[in-house]
Figure (cartoon, rainbow, N blue to C red):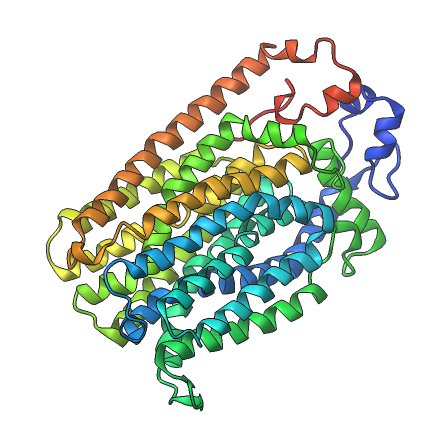
Length: 498
């Protein structure tokens, strides 16, 4: 007979009647229960409906962001006169805008709902990608990169928060790992699509001829717009509105999230939620780790075609040789997410894979021989790509309550995005062909990931031990039952995922 799950009765009894009724999802009863078999069926239905669509959306998001690297070696540098550091400036301005809009965007998403908001962002950066095909000057390129940052800035943290509204803490990393693996898949598809689109014969009207690198932006933008139009008809607003679930399954889907976080999924973001998110030490660990990982992920994503070109793989060959690197990184990132959720640990995997990143960038920096360095690219990519979903999931897992999770997911990504700004300045034209400065920066970043992950592990273990022996019980003194219920991760009963 399947095991039965129920409410934490002791916890529930400690809340006043008004709170328990208000927090319930529609159709809740005093002692809700369901079988683990029912929950498994619901989880699989959610996986089929949510994960593929969100993965496609983020794949296109990342593709529209990094295709500038593919366009660079297909003639964009010459056509737009990107001399000196112009390419680095145009690339970094995107990340500056990106990080500024992340937190406000997630607050808006929490208020208006994700079903139409996330696809509208995708539609926006798809249109911007199409517009990039028509730029004629460096200044116009900077302008469209600013617009791209505005629309893309809310997409990544928005999708992360959206998933956390459907999946429990122990289920999240695997799903986040799948959709974030789209970043590496975007690298693989980006190389193939860039190779294919750049070969389309010149076309268009006089004064706006589309060719080579312009084809890359135009057709990838078209694909993005199509996906954005389809998305609202696939994605539900909340678990309770998922049309592919039965009425009971809708209730269970919403109730299991509410019971785990002891809060309603409809909780509004208030100032004390923002304060709690920005004062969470675990958030700083995860934001710092995301920053360090982003240096390497964004650096590889934008500059890998250039790095391979300098290793002797020219133009189309450089595009093709980047594909298996990204495929390997994607598969490993998904596998890490799966086993991390099974073991309900984050830090051990982050520590382990940082060693691969250290090894890969160490060989790229101090190794000799093109074949050895190409192998090192695999180690570097496999080592760093699982880190993004790892740190983000760790942060969301340890930010209790829907409102705090909404702010935390955007906050972690916003701080982490500054790593992308550094990444575009790591590989400078004057540093080629071996890029000792760029590889040294990434090597150092992965060493820092190792130490930061270890600190995060020790901090969470220490906090859990203190709470287990009653060392944080004083936080309940003088609080009303409503205030106790609103403590989130600061509640003495809350335990950090390590």
